[in-house]
Image 1 (cartoon, helix red, strand yellow):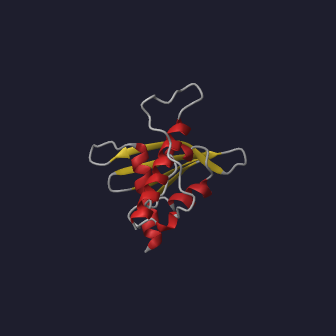
Image 2: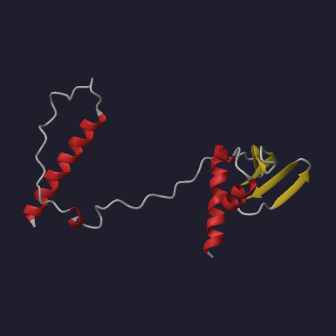
Image 3: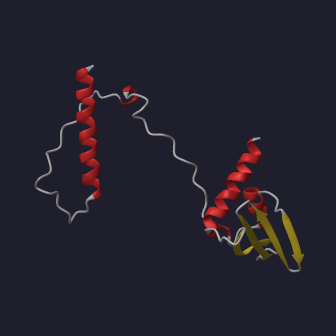
Length: 150
């Protein structure tokens, strides 16, 4: 077991140095105090790493709120579900999505194909607190995910 640990340590050291070298541009120099790269063992098996060493799965990435602008109504409904409130003032519509901490207002106007698309996005806070727009958007996305999971 000690030999395998030594091989893993040598392989990981080599990978760390290779990663550092990849970060440096052509004009950058490696400091003279850097240790020489160790040669990785050819028979290191990554699947032999203990479970605690393996990387945890990445958290789901959520789109930026700015990407809503220009999106057709059908895409928004697929992303956030049906709005909690909808007001039609021809030719525009106001769609409102509500969370405990915020309200997302989407102003939709006819686009090139006469279908409604998001023209403006606005976030309002509850109880006098104005949240970050992205935080409000992610809260609403997570709420829809939770509703679909149940």
